[in-house]
Image (cartoon, rainbow, N blue to C red):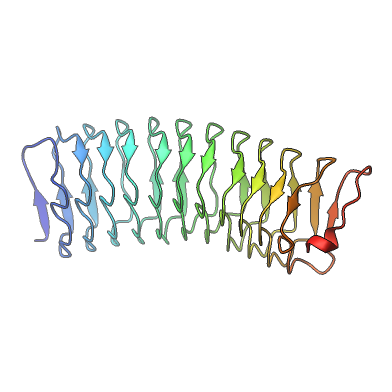
Length: 269
């Protein structure tokens, strides 16, 4: 099967075309309201796809491992995109998420190694675990309304500058791990915890300011950040943490704290 179309129906059955490795083109008719889970999973030759304006939801694993798909237009009516919906779509280079989607589920774009551009609307309030794991994103604008970002969400990506919204209270485990091009990150004013390995191997990061809301820095949080030499703590009671949180940072590494507080950074390095 090299191309396919159908003339009626409002929903596509679970995995209806899954594993059709020779399928290159498909037309989904107007009136369809939902792309069901796994519908085109493993259609590795699929190059062209038109989703009609009537679609309001995209199920989990819907386009998993559609390697040849380079771009896709998600209709404005879509309010729900399931977990792993576009995972391992290695040819996908850019995507716009429509206003109305409130959550980017876990693993949604996991392994989209060619993804360099994404637009996230202000309607999004949460980004799930491993949502952009090992994507090639060099820039991502996280909307101010986001209050939750899952573990490893940007791990291994190419992001260079990131601003964490003030509503986020935790820098999750591994969030920026292996982000080798990250040079600047601004933490929100409500961050209380910096998780395990959250910045590990961010080899280009040279300085960071820890907000006064932060009370805990977990194990290996900045381990192997070999260029990190300046950490600024704004609070008069700098955060507690594991002894390995600053292991293998720059040789001239130093923590700056308010003048009325003494902090033995060597003991925590």
